[in-house]
Amino acid sequence: MSGASGTAFNIEERIRAKLVAAGATSSEKAVTSEEAHFDMQEQNWIHYIAGGLFSRVKKVASNSYYASA
Image (cartoon, rainbow, N blue to C red):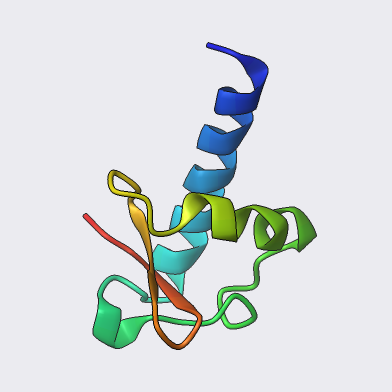
């Protein structure tokens, strides 16, 4: 595994953990990055991680995010 993909995986897991802790487990319960208390690194990566076909972090139209199953 390359360093970049390992970093992306680690950041995604941190983001997912914060979203689950904030209760954002569906599109109806989605929260903003501020509400999930993302740090600067997570805020920089969220656009790259969220919304991909196989991503477990999803973005809704209101710039809110949730962790999918």
